[in-house]
Length: 633
View (cartoon, rainbow, N blue to C red):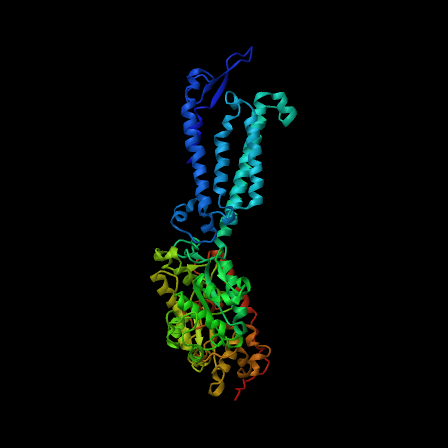
């Protein structure tokens, strides 16, 4: 708006010259806004008072007012503690790096110069001269260089688009200079530029412009696709990055508390990954921000949320308890993160609760004199919100980080008044989405494989996820669950049709069934080139054991050639709902399912991969005597 209105104001000084005598070369200049007014006359000079009044009011005072406003709010914006004034003027600074908060005013000055102030150059006959075009080209080139060096934008995509736009603008001014030169003197056009006529110069400029537009479209398309696929947290409801706003009294979005002995590596991973997924997030971490251990309580109060990484020995740490009491005293929202892997310093929730009851017994601690005892601590850490299970494996880790990010955003002052924007949660482009089979599938299960029947029903239900109600019903109907013993060894078994998969559920009872039926059926399935989809239970209460146990439980014949059962990667099955959903999707993918939003080419590629996987299964040679699996006692 500012450049366009300013250009209308400058029309009171803008003149265009015309040739009035071909013999003498005399020219006269007329006002562009009214061609009846001759420039440099008393009638024209009578407009000067109006021009200067509006010039000071709009092109001068408005940018100055914006500059003063940005300077007044720069400290709170840099600290991400946005108040009412800064929030109302967000349109001026939200796209720029806080260190270059005023860049909008700089860009506004460039636009004013190129659209309006350049008209002050040779006001009477400048439209027919080269000086305006030359100066505009120099200004555009200089601004492009400064833009590339300063990099004022938060997002690299905005920087690339701004640089591309200014490059096009500079090329346009240079092309205008060429056309103006060739229009005025064909001999000079041929000597200086190399074109024989104005027509040749015009054709060159048209071709150059078309090439620049094509290149710009390619850049825009590339950056758009890259921005959409960039692995950063976005709101599911709008697809936009979340607003990371701090409350006025805080400098950090979160304070992460952990035990050095058992949680240091994990918390570093949590913080670094969150900083990648949420650009601009500020999380207090000891190795980054701890200057004085005596000021831990002050640091806890300086963060909006309190992240607790629960691992063995956490509640035994004196400094960890100091941080807990400080969080209780300042009433910070707790975001508990739970390490479940015993090998990585984890423990069960019950064990951690017992550790809390045993150690959080201080009477009137200095940071929180009103502390009422372990019951209050248990309520805030374990009962106020369910602890988020920390899983470090690929897509499962992403689910843990998304859960942490969502809880942090829910306690943000910006979303406290906009809860509907977070109602659908958050997502990351490229995350594992719903998958489905492209045709009928038969899942074979063994009765002796404890728990596999319930698991197969979960897999069947997940096969219809992400479709419409009718499509979901059809997808579920296309999945048939059959008893493996009847299908592979039954005398009256119906022939297997479509894609067939043997589902093997790995838990503490796998291959320990009486008679070794599970091992025998797995071997029979592999002899018939039926793919084995293995699922490894992770929850100890459901029979989860370390994967190394299966090398003792599994009969040796299945570990050796030609079977090599564990050459196929088993999908881990986690108990938390978000992680279990990912597990089931990965199980379906291992069975040949494809993403619901996959195109025809991706579906064909997935089908080809399935055929390759089946072809790699080695069938026992007919002449080779069959080895019966030996069940481990």
